Image 1 (cartoon, rainbow, N blue to C red):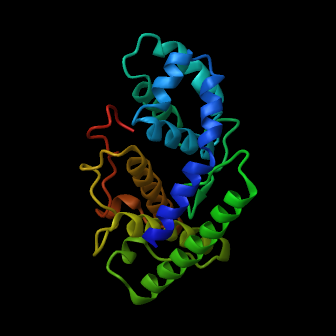
Image 2: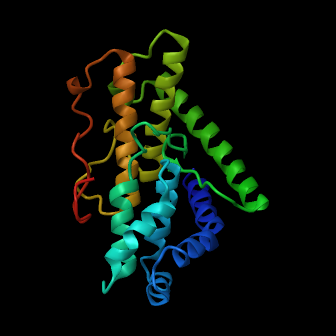
Length: 239
């Protein structure tokens, strides 16, 4: 599973590499700023934030254009624009133009926009395998009564609600698989998380937990399995 996830994320990053470069070049940034971003070790964080933001329904081109004036004279433009993007794109878009986030099994951002046919096919193939495999692992865990599963509450009896509950459980299972969570703990502790992508995935899994508890008819506050504070150490601000 971890290998499949790594392959998906590597392909996703490579598939949009040129697109993000064009976006930065047409965003109002100076040539020097663009070159410094593209040459920076933080470029990976910038592109990950763009991909995550777009999957959450945000207009990332508009956000970059609006952020451009703030970077004038900044010594580390890549880190600065990554911080701005993470601040505004980490959560799904809300309001009158809210959209459902596009994520593999509710967790991993799915790239949007123009992507070559071969890369799109490779992504789709891995998405289907990941989704099918993690759903099977979730069902196996529920049937075996693994220690973390009772914390999700009782599955609803109505078909549609039961399916939504299972999807939420599957998101949590994928998080556990990706981040090596074992035993009765539902999710890992948020305090040591310093990576932005990991922090946003924690929030997605936390949201899935809350949804499962609501669908089961249980008060989510009755379980101490998940810390309801956002991971923030080393991230500069509460997410």
